[in-house]
Amino acid sequence: MFNKILIANRGEIAIRVARACRELGIATVGVYSNADLRSSHLKFVDEAFCIGESAPQQSYLNIQKIIDVAKKASAVAIHPGYGFLAENARFAEACEKAKIAFIGPSSKALMLVGDKVASRNTVKAVGVPIIPGMECASTNMRTFATMAEKVGYPVIVKASMGGGGKGMRIVRTPKELRESIAAGQSEAKSAFGDETVYLEKYIEKPRHIEFQVLRDMHGNVIHLFERECSIQRRHQKIIEETPSPALNDELRRKMGEAAKQVIVAADYTNAGTVEFLLDEDLRFYFLEVNARVQVEHPITEMVTGVDLVRQQIMIAAGEKIKLAQEAVQQRGHAIESRIYAEDPENNFMPSPGKILFLQEPSGPGVRIDSGIYAGWDVPTHYDPILSKLITWAENRKMSITRMNHVLKNYVILGIKTNIGFLKRIMETPTFGRGDYHTHFIDEHEDELLPTHTTLPCALIAQALLLQEKRIVPSGAGLEAKRHTEMTPWQELGHWEICGEKI
Image (cartoon, rainbow, N blue to C red):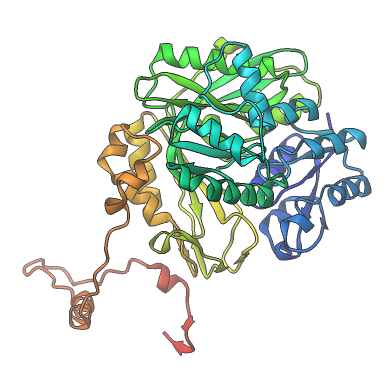
């Protein structure tokens, strides 16, 4: 087993990895940029090193700086978390050359599955269904135009490397093609350091289903069932659940076996996620392999009881998977809501700034993976995810009810968040029925983003007066008592807005 691991990430995922290391008795090394000098993940590591300026290219995406810090700190392994360099084959190769274990697949496997086009061709060769599209990446507009005409519009432009919806553009007409490709290339370059993109047929109203897979260096492979990831905004998942309400036992078995087949064909080791699109006729198509621990991994942990980060570390250390496929079972239902610093009423623009007050919910079946605290400044340089709220219950209906309740009790003041937006999703009848697809948010915009009206000042004043003078029922025979429930505003103590004392 490793004695020291460098965590090449920040925020809640860095904290998650640090906790797993602590339970395994492994020392940890953290890294941070200038913008993250006061980041909460630094409190969970044994030592920490600054790796550069705030811009990702100068810090969290700087391969050489991270390798240098690992050597300086005598770390024998690196865990990349998700995002940044997690799926970068050059980073994995640099670790191999430096004789530092990369907690993930080999650079060769990472290059294969990270290249979405190459992975499509590999999967096609073993008989797993794929979506029609390009068999090689290109920069030639004529090649893109020819393929788009061949498969038929609409098509989707995707980054060849990386994931998370970065670089994706839906193209519905030939006029949109050139601009969409240029925009996709620019975003892919910024997110992953690689601007190559490819094109495939766009499936209307699909469900996005992914299977969690583990494979060790000894050839043992298991899947830990599916996650439903169809609630998306701009191709970015915001709510995930497991089990999927769309799958029956037979379809679940077929997709799980196909996922294992993909991982074996790619000679992939460690934790990975095989993603599929499911059409309206319940036909599934391979989408891609995400070669990292996923943002939504906690819901799989909640229903299977398997610690995925712990498994990643143990597999990278050369240990065998001690679980048999038939021993892995789903128990109950789990949902994850991603909490973002963004303003749903302003086209989901990022909302950086200082968190003035934080109240995180708790209770039975509630888990929060968080990287924030009151007084922290949310930076502008990185993905605006703040935390992940997870609920578990005996069945889906109870898990939704629990999620709705805890979202009501999640309070973040000082910045805009999507908490209210997520709560409205939970209350939407379509979501309650489980009858949804990847266009759910677009189709329910009126319900999820209600129009606000301005109340007259007189009505507000009257409401406040009634609150102050609550009417006590006559004949109660008891002394009247005022309602004393504390509000977040009262719990703040003294505070000010625009210099005026409240």
